[in-house]
Image (cartoon, rainbow, N blue to C red):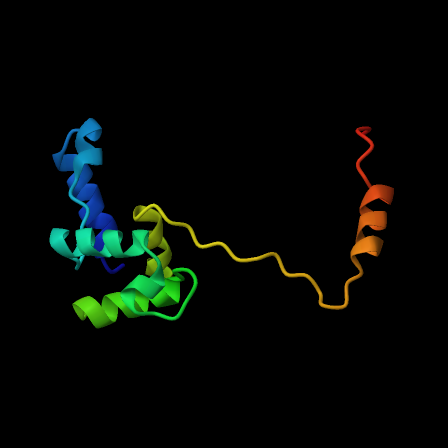
Length: 121
């Protein structure tokens, strides 16, 4: 049977170390590509309106933050990563709750009143 390197490597590591010390193994990962100075500039920019940065948008969106980072710092990130960047900068991306354009507000109120929770199980 061929040797499975990752499993055997892990078993060798376990055999060599104390079991309690396994949690402190180095975990490789990609480091941030923005420098501390760039991060400071980005958070200051995100604290202001996008119009202050030259964009004709009312709020920062993940796509807009991605575009700003690419244009300003020349660094490309995935769109999914922009949600993490915004969260780290203290922002959250929220969208409006959709409402059908033909919806009748009076009928919606009537429906909500009729089907309110009664508190019984």
